[in-house]
Length: 230
Image (spheres, rainbow, N blue to C red):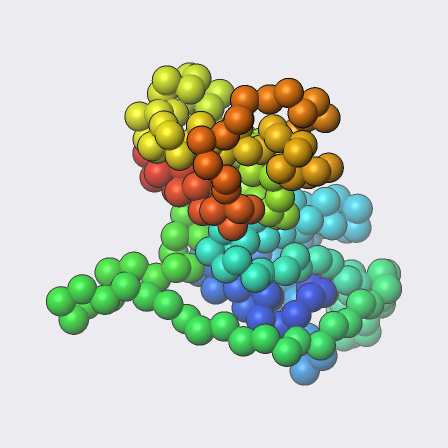
């Protein structure tokens, strides 16, 4: 039986972010002397390389988005070479390899209450990805979290707004003034330049300024409250 491995590219710390995010999945992480790989028993029966890579890239898109919510400095993990191993152990390489050197580190985090571990970050991440497989809105939201910028944050807001049935419902799960401030700043070219959603400068003056980090915190808070209710 042939076996397929898909090499993961990126810094080790980022690969560890997404590795810890899934404790149970059809995809399995392998750590070898030359790096990290993904494999799956279902993949081993699949011989269409394009189909395999499409599935893996979708999987990584969700994991990268989830990791970006939890770790603000997460950098995207991608795919490198696809390796097909035949019955004799011979390896055939089908894609080029991209390597990077990591200079960062990550500390595991967990919540402890009354001497017992209540929650680990990876379990939260795993839950989001599991919901994404069956919920298109969650899948789209995680996709846009792959890169934190004003455009993508606004798209996440729009996805959640449409999913819950409009702004009135959104205001039930997040402070109205905080969200309105985000909306107003996100549209102002005179505040954000080309990062703004609109070119016109004649927009409503925001009640206060908001940095990208503050905007990210607002939308992440909205996302977590929303997804916990699904």
